[in-house]
Length: 162
Image 1 (tube, rainbow, N blue to C red):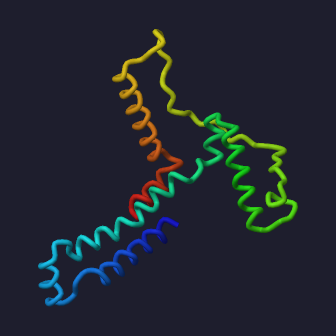
Image 2: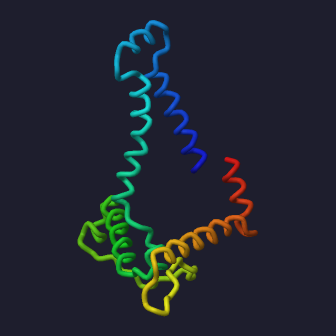
């Protein structure tokens, strides 16, 4: 999926440049007279997908798996219910969410708990800002180094090459 998205992005940028950027000398001379040149338009058009993606991320729910791992079980169930309602509303099932039925979950398999970057307990009940920052940097560095550990090193190198 990553390679396909990069390919589509390259095609989008090339087609956009072909359509917006001047190709003849006459067009270049005419563009120099205008303050808002074709290159400005090209850069603005190239920013459109990033802006749309950023706005879209605001409206997407968090992954139910992450919510369960983080201990937000109620929020995870609400996300599952929204997904169920959307899927069944599209199908037009009379007994599904379109008919007012609730999502019934009989069993939930919890993923294995992974260590989370929780702040270390402090003896006095509060920590300094500098200690929190240093702990966050340490957690980030440990997570980064895990990318080069034996189970992930091959995938990491392949993704770095791509």
